[in-house]
Image 1 (cartoon, helix red, strand yellow):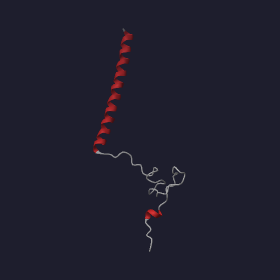
Image 2 (cartoon, one colour; image 1 turned 120 degrees about the horizontal axis):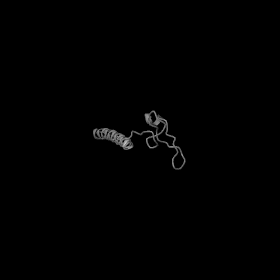
Image 3 (cartoon, helix red, strand yellow; image 1 turned 180 degrees about the vertical axis):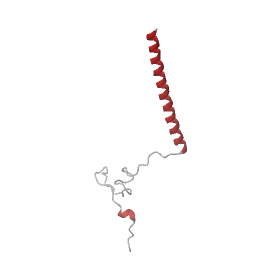
Image 4 (spheres, one colour; image 1 turned 135 degrees about the vertical axis):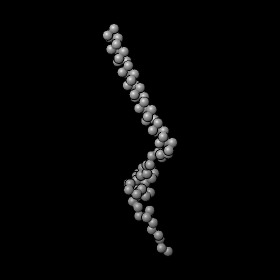
Length: 86
């Protein structure tokens, strides 16, 4: 019986320490040094049309708040100048 060798069998091993102190035997992700369980694959939050819209909305709202805050400080400074003149 001939044993088939798959690409996964030839892949580099993760090598992260397990709870028992032994090295992990899972194959490392292509281009990384660790397996999927030890930080090799971290894609982050998936982008959906609604999340992209929400992010844009939040950025715009943050800019508006900053502008309003700047205007408020300008009005307070003008008030102080006007009170000093009177």
